[in-house]
Image (tube, rainbow, N blue to C red; front, side, top):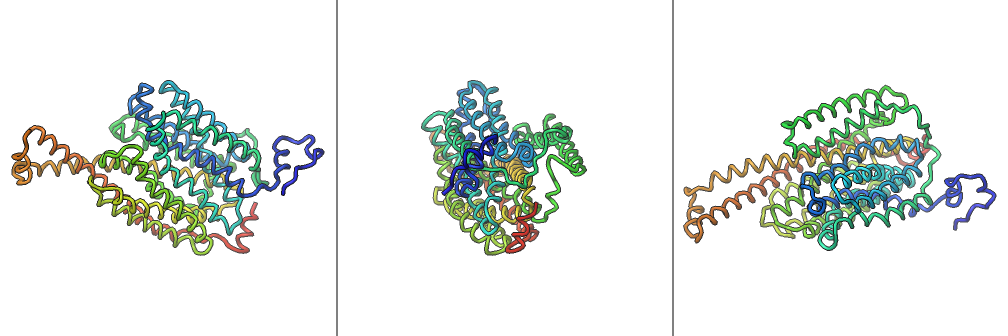
Length: 527
C-alpha cells in the first residue's frame, strides 16, 4: 500500500514533484490503463468518422468531396506530429507532452461536435489530429519501458488490442451512433474518456530519468519546415490523388515534387545535425528497419483493407453502415484473441516464426477473398475475416517487440514516432493503390463483360425474349454488368494485397532476436 509523502517533503516542490512523491511507483496496471485510454480514443476516432461523412455533409451543407477533408485533415495533422514525438518529449517531458496531447484532443472533440460549418469542423479536426498524432507513439513508448524484458511481448499485445482492433471497431460503433443518434455524438463520446485519461496521466505517468531534457531554443526551423511540407504533401497526394485524377491534376504534380524535395532535404539536414529534431540514425538497427518494412506492408493490409472491405460490403453486397460494421467485427475479435497468445509466444521463441506465420495466414485468407461475389453471405466472409484478424495478432506483437528491443531507452519516443508514422504512411499508400487498382480494373472488366452481352449470346437473347419490358430488361442487364465488374475489381485488389504479404515474408529474416537474460538487463541499463 502506498503512503503519501510527508508535508515537509513537498514544500517548495513543483506540482509534478508532488504528484510523483505521492505516487512514486504506480502499479503497471494503472499506467497501462492510462495510456490505453488515449490510444483507443485516438485510433477509433480516426475510423469512426468515415461512416458519418454522408450525414455530416447533409447537415453542414457540403459535398461528399468537401466533407472528405474531415478525414483527410485529421490524418495530415497526425503524420506531421508523429515524427516529432521524440523531440517534443525531450522538450516538454513525457508527462506534460502526453497530458497536453490528451487535452488538445479532448477540447478539439468538443469543438468538432459543436461545429456548424465545413470550415469550422475541418479546422477543429486538424487540431484534433495534432493531439491524436502524439497519443499512439507516446503510449507505445511508455508501455514498452514500463514492463520488464520478459513481459514486453505482453505489453505490446495489450497495446495492439487498441492499435489493431480500433480500426475495425470504429466503423461498427460509428454505424450504430449514426443510425440511432446524431453525428456530433461520435465526437462527444471522447469527452469523459479524455478527462479521465488526462487526470490519470497526471497521477500515474512520470518522466523517466534517462530522458534528456533539452531547451526550446536552437530549433532547426528549416528542417522542421522541410519535414512538415514534405510529409504533409506526401499524405495529401496519397489521400486525394484518386479524387484529383492523380498526375493529370497540377496540384498533385506540384505537391509530389514538394514531397520529394521536402523529405529529401529533411533527411539530408537531419543526418548532418548532431542534435536533430528527428534522429534518423535509429535506422542503423537492422531489426528496426526490417520491422518498418513489414510495418508498411501490414499498414497496407490493415488500413487498405479496412477501407476496401466496407466499400465492398456496401457497393457490391448492398449492406448498411451497421451491417458493414458487423461484418468487420469477426476480424477484430480474432485479433483480440490472438494478441495474448502472440505476446506469450514472443517471450519463448524467435519473433521470426510467429511473424512469418501471421504474414502467410493473412495472405492465404486474403487470397480466398478473391473468390467472393455479389451473392456472398455473412458466413462466406466470417471465417476469412476471422483468419485475417487472427493473423494480425501474430504479426503485430512480435514485430513491435523485435523492432524496439534494440533501441536504447533514451531513443524510445523517437523510434515509436517513426514506427507509427511509417505504418500510417503504408496504410495511406495501400488505400491509394487499392483505390486506383479497383477503378482501373473495374473499367477493364466492364468492357470485357459488356462485349459478351449481345444478341449473339443465347442467354442474353433468351432473357430479352422473355421480358415484358425490353427497356427495363436492358437496364437490368447493364446493372448486372456493372455489379459483376465491380465485384471482379475488388477480387483483383484482394489478391494483389495477398501477393504483397507473401513478398514481404523474406524480410522477416532481417529481424534479430530480442536480447534475453543478462544481455537484456545490460541493454535496458543503457543510458
